[in-house]
Image 1 (spheres, one colour):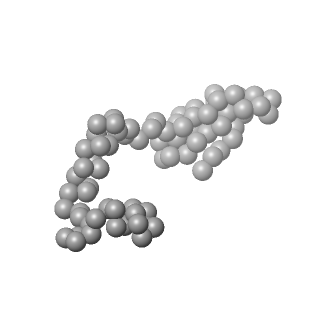
Image 2 (cartoon, helix red, strand yellow):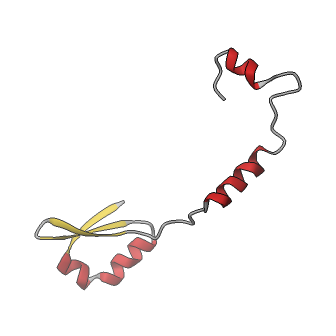
Image 3 (cartoon, helix red, strand yellow):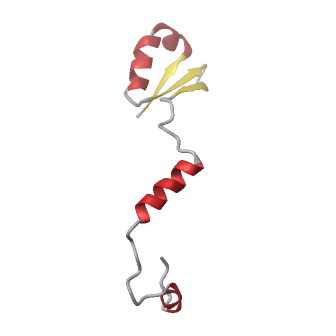
Amino acid sequence: MTVTVGAYEAKTHLSKLLAAVERGETIVITRHGKEIAHLTPPPRHVRSVNEALEELRELRKGITLGPDVTIRELIDEGRRW
């Protein structure tokens, strides 16, 4: 949910606005009707490339095409995997 407040109101009610941001809301601060800032929650944990690759490797462990199926056969059949 996004809430828009003026700069004066933001200054006056900063602690309430920060509590709303903690709950996941985004606060847009305006001055004379023009957006000047966004208060947003910090990004969730951002994985490094190596962490993401390791998670993908773990996910695909034990997953096979089957004993008699090759990738070439799937491609020839027009399937995308």
